[in-house]
Image 1: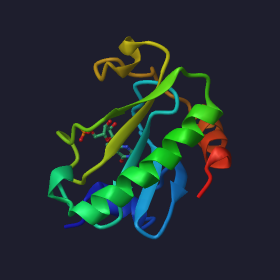
Image 2: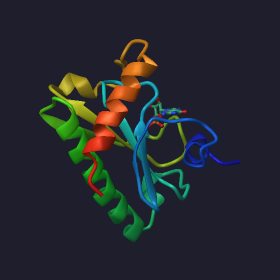
Image 3: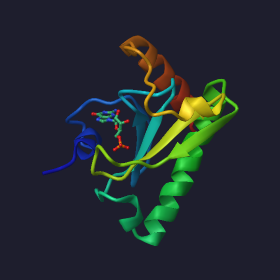
Image 4: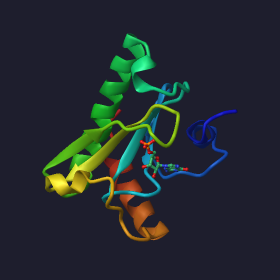
Length: 132
Ligand code: 5GP
């Protein structure tokens, strides 16, 4: 059965897409730890990120860098933090989180009831700053 993220890529489940190319897809985390919290996934489904072959993993990092640049331009932050957990969804993904301080990387903290309007606004801001 395809992962929930493969179903997002296929358009079966809606997402706040910020960028995509032929191999990778970036979208807002539905339960963000901070505004602009974004996930980058390979369209080809692999559970564990370090099972992805070297060439594709390299391409994934380059794509992730472009997304991080768009986040940094779009939102006030000192840097964009990077994390890989993968404990919940068995489809490799990189978390990108705009940071003002190290507490912004705390996965136990979530934005309370993120409104669809604000999610859409943040998504469009990041998407409009993405350069392929
Ligand atoms: P992890 O697997 O890295 O531990 O956590 C999975 C992440 O995916 C969580 O931050 C969670 O909020 C996010 N997530 C889970 N299901 C969905 C979904 O259907 N849509 C979106 N946009 N994010 C999701």
